[in-house]
Amino acid sequence: MREMTLGQAAVILLCICCLTAAASVGPVGLAPLAADDECSSATGSSQECTLSALQRRGARLSSEEPWPDAELEIPAEALVLAELGPGPSSFSSCGGEAYDLSKQGCCDGVLYSRTSQGCCGGKSVYSYSSEGCCDEQRVYKFGSESCVPSAPSAGSEDSSTHFECSSTWPPVKLADYWRRYCASNRHMAWAMTTSCSVAYPAVHQRSSKAAEHRVLAACGKKAGENCHIFDLDGSACHRQRCGEEIYDGALKGCCGGKVYDLQTEGCCSGAVFDARSDGCCQGEIYSRASNSCCGGKQLYDSSTHGCCLNHGAQVYPFGTHNCCFHPAGVCKIPKGRPSCCH
Picture 1 (cartoon, rainbow, N blue to C red):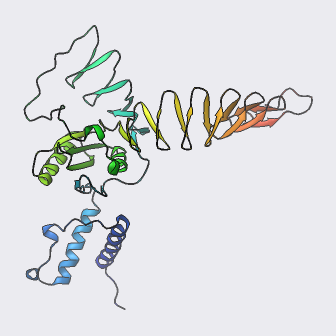
Picture 2 (picture 1 turned 30 degrees about the horizontal axis):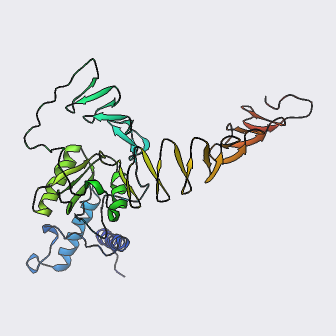
Picture 3 (picture 1 turned 135 degrees about the vertical axis):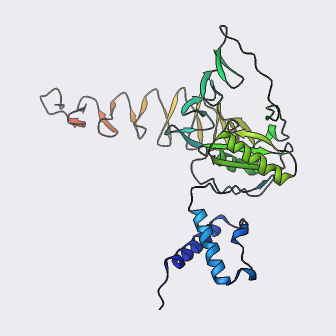
């Protein structure tokens, strides 16, 4: 058998990967080959042209350039975002720390609460109760400082743009994809026509401006009319859907298809409970009046037992056992001795 060259092996591997990827996403049309990938009778040997085209495409796929966004028409049965992968529905990372985009935001590497704080100009965290953001440029204190906003520059996005779907966003068919978009890391943007009939998202961009420019240009080209920014870097990600109900993810949560209050309630294995009096331990709701959860793993009677976290999560009975640093963890008290700790 003739030996296979490195280039031919790479082409075969690439073809297998492409076929595998196509099978995993279902009946979705693949993007057309770029002009330099196309082969015609005028290009000479068809086999050599195809080999060269696949090698060029393989080089592009292995580069660090982001994958192109899929175009989206709303309503749609399915949305394919090549840059969005599976994972937690609305979680991302800020400064190396995981957080829920529906409840928190990331401001220049600093986490802040969407309920009580804001991000001014993408750089400074401020408190709604005592501070304001002036013209997206500086934070000022109520009572001691003032702000006179400047007029918006020509060509800038008007924050008062009215989208026909604003009151019902996200729609049922796109709720999961909206959560996936909100879970994306780095800079992202979502542009739509005011009728919400055409939209274009982009994630993993080098900057907010780059994301904004990309989606506005792509959405406008697709729609044949002006598009506007609906979301930039997760600013609208507090809007979430739970079944048929729209809710503010900074104040509410979704549990088993029901909206609940994050301040007073909790969610345990799909069931809502009163967080003021109860807790959740390994999927089981319990009364905090007489029980506790050790290390989030083991439920125990806090009137007769203790929780030791010096060597994992260990529950021990009072009077007969100790929780020690040396030896680390729970040990049994020997007869005639007050403790088993060293």
